[in-house]
Image (cartoon, rainbow, N blue to C red; front, side, top):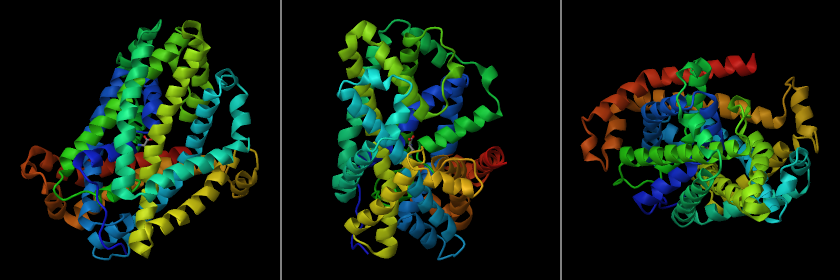
Length: 467
Ligand code: PFF
């Protein structure tokens, strides 16, 4: 066991690291598309309500659990439940979930890296052709990029919490904000850009139905990196003198602002490309948007800024997505590392090697499930599922287990660990919290309607995806 637990060096460092986790591919692509297809401003409003009234309390609960226990998710559940065997199950789930989501996310990030490199090599025109994506993901160079990406991420992780995770976030996040703003300003000056802004912002309450509500909620939950053990782990690296409510608010605001701003980049670009486009036809999948649709849009910018300008814009966009994905991956891979260190007493280095080896094999399994070697896909098909390995990982972990983990966090904190202990942890570093409206709201909501809502989402997904 490590003698002294590592900590983030400063409050800002923690906020940027947690925001680095939260700001990911989900913010930059999935969010703007979902918002435009599902009621524009109406979706934005509903999403903001979910973030601040539902997700924020869950984030505080996860951070408080981690900080009080000073442990990884498995250790946190065990310790705060007084060693209960039953409650160690959600601890293990909060380990398996990030582990598998990381594999899935690694593969998509490898493709982003590949698209960035191709753009820099002057091949944007190639990326914009229909057949390219299929060829690219089935080419062996993907393995090389996987190695490069894993070395970069594990290199950051090897330097530890303060000198690795925090320092990377302090460099990369401000860079991400500036680049995002730069791209938005550029794109807003393009022809028909305002049409896109209109589609994105004008509310259409008629589009809000139960499916949209459930989508907004799931998106908010995923976007804030909840249900993945990440915030429990990051909480364990927080200093006692830092306020959990204050820092969580800052993370949620940053995450939501980035998602909102990304819409001002994506929608104007799409409408500049085709002012007649029907946004309801846009792909729901981030991968579909990033790799099949957006390259065409970027290429079309050559009419006004030339091929070089269009390529520079595309490269900046892929770089932005890559940075967002790397800071998210760092946070999610830190979860199993913390578990191996806390539960098995491994050194950071040994934990990194162990996890990287397993994830490398699984990521290859995920990547090849697109056809190059159909082994994994056939394997799951033999087991009776009409899905690729990649699809299965997404459906089981991302869609289904995430809300379940969130539900368990709420129930655990309020009914097992107990409100009084939770309150005490939230008050550390925040004396104004005691007796405040937010304290009362958080205690009430976490014990009542938030778990209920998460349960409904869980049931809804199980019903939709498995039957
Ligand atoms: N908040 C992240 C996103 O919106 O993309 C969620 C996430 C996914 C975090 C994958 C970490 C990760 F590895």
